[in-house]
Image 1 (tube, rainbow, N blue to C red):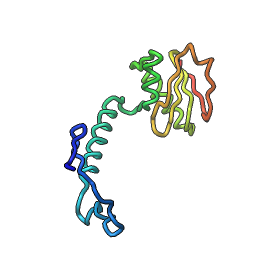
Image 2 (tube, helix red, strand yellow; image 1 turned 30 degrees about the horizontal axis):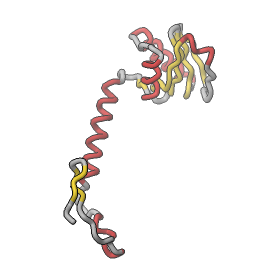
Image 3 (cartoon, helix red, strand yellow; image 1 turned 90 degrees about the horizontal axis):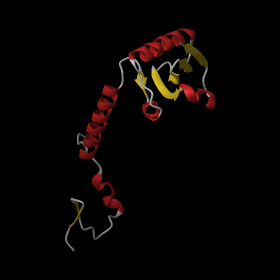
Image 4 (tube, one colour; image 1 turned 180 degrees about the vertical axis):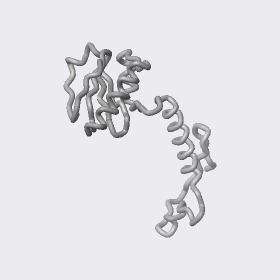
Length: 141
């Protein structure tokens, strides 16, 4: 039986199962690099760069927070960004770690040491939510 092509990937015909002495056949020798690893590293580098380019400097958005902002039609304008940055600065001085920041527009759960917005809740839904695992709250109107 000849080699087969599936989805443009060449699949060799394997007629025997390797014995224990042939198990290390795919092991890299010292100094060799894996094509798969370099491809994976390149892909990860590109995705990290695109993710970083979407985040404002100094204040980061988790993937979950970005999704929540979109779902709840919340925008992070300059004024809101400034309020969040000021809140994080104040929380750092008081030792806040996982904090609830409430502004006139929304509420945000923030990982203070990492300057990261973890999630966002629109103003109309704040009363319907239970906020757990937070150690501090700050009101920024």
